[in-house]
Image (cartoon, rainbow, N blue to C red):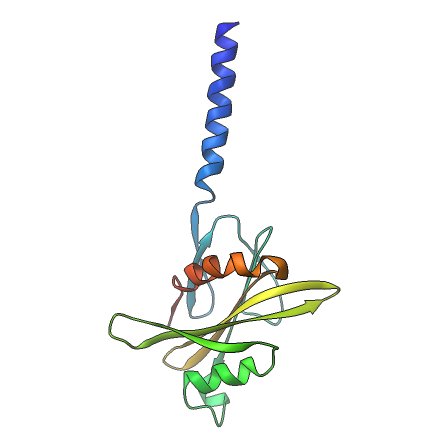
Length: 160
């Protein structure tokens, strides 16, 4: 009987500790882009995105556009503002590297799809020949608590 109790307690403790540490990090690669999320994400096929990933509570969607195909857009700020104008979002935040150069620009917006309300983080990056647009998404009710997580994930992104 004592052995059974010890085994049960060990199992319960082991399972509870596993839950405390969460999912392990996992790197995903798109066309010219790498991102580190957690292992709960898996690839999905979405025709309008070059890389789309989903977990139980979050989505990641990435697309890139050749700079040469965007006449009138000459920098990352202009690209961000064109994209943001297609949402109900506002505001602009910049993440800079240690030299003060802009690493990426981001902001937040909400949208509805099929009766569901979602909260998004729009992030744009500039590569040598392309601009990259990334959307992190979750349920709108969770947007405030997701902002820290989305920003952490955005900081892991590396482009061409």
